[in-house]
Structure formats: structure tokens, C-alpha cells
Image 1 (cartoon, helix red, strand yellow):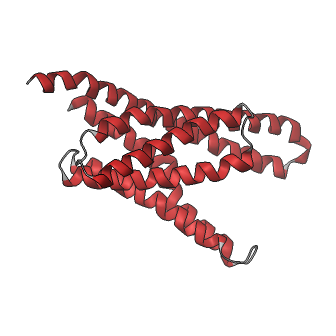
Image 2 (image 1 turned 180 degrees about the vertical axis):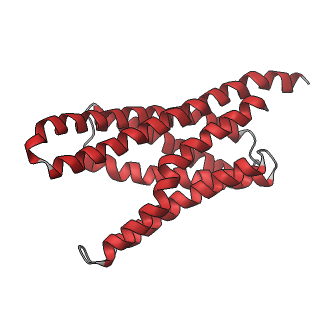
Image 3 (image 1 turned 90 degrees about the horizontal axis):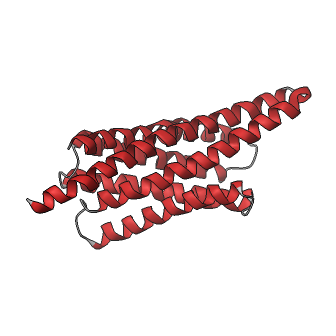
Length: 218
């Protein structure tokens, strides 16, 4: 009884962090979409290179900063979920890998904005960290579902989103193995984007919002 009562504030705090992670994640991805739209407009309108370039720089900086904030908010949520996982070696390793990935994503965006890390160095680190985070999302939700620590719908959605984003990365990776500038390569890239982007850009932040709602009412 005492343990249950003492855990309520921590659960409510985890719910707030989940809401924050989902909200900031949506905004970060909106800034990222705006960045690529501005870059496309800039390529088609050389005469507006200065104004569009400044706007794209601002959108990129905002995406990096807000994205770092989003992954920072994920860390307390991951720690709270860790207490509901089965105590096995595999879960401990997965938790450690997921938390490390979140920390790298948090620090990487800040270092990039502060120009302490080159874009060419930060990009592969971010890609690897997101792949690990997708694996974490998939496995953790499967374990939480099997142990009834989360509602079936919430855990199933998290697992599907993790698998979808991960599948997108795999397909794009296979496309990189094709001859450069060959006609199948953009087709494979497009398929990977169709599979992975909806889960990554929208699905994962929305899952954190749904998780926050559940934790807040549990």
C-alpha cells in the first residue's frame, strides 16, 4: 500500500515527460519538414537564395534544438518504463542501449548547433542512435505487452511504430548498396521513406502522447 502510494508521483511525472516528449517531437519534425521545403524552394529559385537560406538555417537550428529537447524528455519516460520490464539480462542490455541512444541524440543536436560537431560526423551518429532507439521501442513494447504492464493497444502501437521505422532504415540501407544514380536506387529510397517516415515523423511522437495519457490516468 505504501509502495503503491509512493509510486504515484513518479508515474505522474513520467506522464508529464511523455507528453513533453511527444509535443516537442512533433514540433521538431515540423521544423525538419519546413527545412526541406525551404531547401527545395531555394533550389528552384536562385534569386531568393539569401532570404530562403536564412529561413532554412533557422528551421534547421530549431529542428536540432527542439529535437534534442524531445529526446531528453524521453529519458525519464524510459527509466519509468524500465521499472515495469521483466528483470532479465536482455531487458537490461536493451534499456542501456536505448538510454545511450537517447543521450547521444540529445547531445548531438546541441553540439551541432554550437558548431562543436561537424554535420558529417553527427549524421551517422544520429542515424545509428535512431536505429537503436527503434529497436528499443520495438522490444520494450513487446515485453510490456507480454507482461501486461501496458495496455495491449498502447504496447502494440509502440511495437509497430518501432518496427516500421526500423524497416524504413533497412530498406534505405539496401538502396545504398545499389549502383549510385541507377534507376532502382531512388525507387528503393522512396519505398523506404514511405515505410519509415510516417512512423518516425508522426507515429513515435504520437505514441509518447498516448503513453502520457495512459500513465496520467493509471
